[in-house]
Image (cartoon, rainbow, N blue to C red; front, side):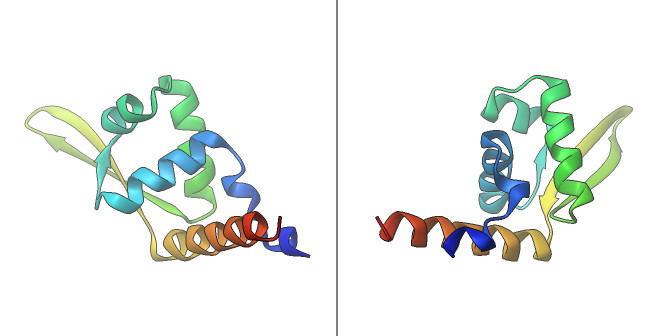
Length: 96
């Protein structure tokens, strides 16, 4: 069945958005993601943590001047998992 390969990590609209943004940007800041996706700090942090725990997103913390900066990027595993997920969705759409 087509949905057997559906990745539950991407079933959320927010996580689909996060991965889509990360796939077209090498890295992006937490603030940038928040603004693009129009999410609250807590909501974005929760979804990012889920993707981090799955190994799909990497977080980098550093100081720019004296201010902390947190950026995110997609991992190779995340890229493959998201591509596979999109292929499942495409097959589902074409099967109708």
